Length: 383
View 1: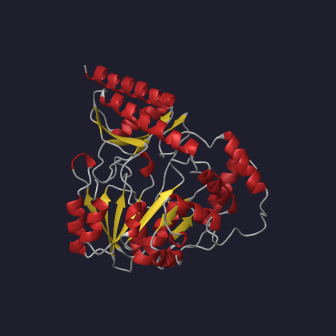
View 2: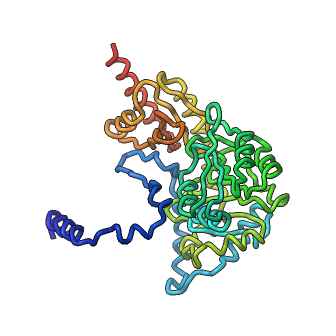
View 3: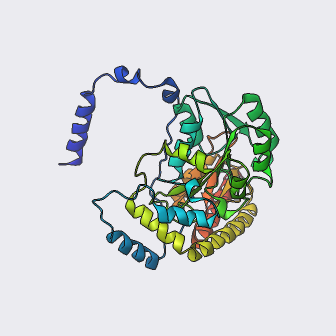
């Protein structure tokens, strides 16, 4: 069938659809009022828009994973609880296996945690800007999302977070560290203060923690009001396989597990995560290299006129364009240089900001060259 004939069939099918209002009236208004979490990702030679690890898993490790997965019975469900993997994660953090949950990415565990902790009308307090999924999930649950603006140069304002949580009687406080999309890391002692000075469940999203900032893992032994979330998508380079985990007090973990779907992580991903956990060395080395590249790139960006560069403890850097709109800079990077970054300028407090993931040395060299040329052309055009 030709493309035009296929399009005509689609148009005809769309015209044949019934009136949507009969179905939409049954959807919660709090959901319909929210914008969906979406991402447009045009093809680009250099893809630096999703904070992915620039390197795939080592070829020899991939081969071992494939061999292990091939030995599995694909017609059978995976383990209901993948005990060896759970025990491996528990050993990594000197924690209790009963306090470890695995998920189809940490996003699933965000959803499960909020589902079991937020009633209709409940309150979740989070920094602004931060990962949009928290706001979206809170809305679908009928909860109230209260953002607390970050401070100067997107530093965490812990006093404001605590006072807001107490004033609003928040059931949940979300602390992303390093924060996405700003790269801000929590100051030392911040999570302890939130635990001590509020009565909220504190959700510490540490998706990027391998790249910098403190971890809240040691606080698991001091409070049952903390949930720590981690992912294999970033430092471990497994974004395409979707694996994350949560650590919590075993009693709290049992309740969160009630909101997870059964057999939520497929057998192939479980095999890959287990293998990666057994071979940490290459990932630690790659993480160190990404951190070094981040610091080098930040210094080079600070040398370019017309940009404000914000501190980052993650595997990305946030910049603000001072000489032309971020949307224009975004388009020119892609159209003229084949570089795809993330335009975050519509977010709270992020006017004219772009987020640039740390790629290979060659990727970052290309970014610097492209920005230098584009910014120079703006100066030349203004003369």
